[in-house]
Amino acid sequence: MLDRDGHIPLYRQIADIVGERIVSGELTPGEPVPSETELKRDFGVAQMTARRVHRELRDRRLIHTVPGEGSFVGSPGTPRPPYLAPLYRQIADEVASAIRAGEIAANRPIPSERTLMLAHGVAKATIRQAISLLRTEGWVFTVAYRGTFASPPENWPAETRPAE
Image (cartoon, rainbow, N blue to C red; front, side, top):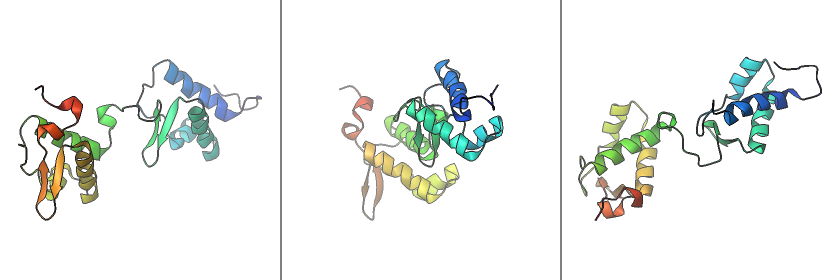
């Protein structure tokens, strides 16, 4: 219960409540914390108060914020549960799994942008983000005017390479 007339600012009281949820394990590493909109609704506070709650939790090093995605429990880089990963990451993981399983052979083309767009019901930009991530991680390579192809196992991320 918030003490609206007390000497402790509302944002600190709310940060204490959310912080306790984190410390107790109710909110786990990588999970989203209540958004500013949710804090406004749940606690009946102003936008600025909700914003200060997030700032206070960041200052306490309990959460981090990813621009355009939200605020999450833990420090920057804390992995999120798979169901909370951005859609482009989920798509990239699916393609990487197909490559790792041999469903897409080395030096063979991966599904086209259009095929991936239709399969996942997303925009071209999302597919391009997924392919860019796959390229950065070493799962695929692109040949101008030819397409994008699965990389051979020696180019895959080190932790996923097959044992030699």
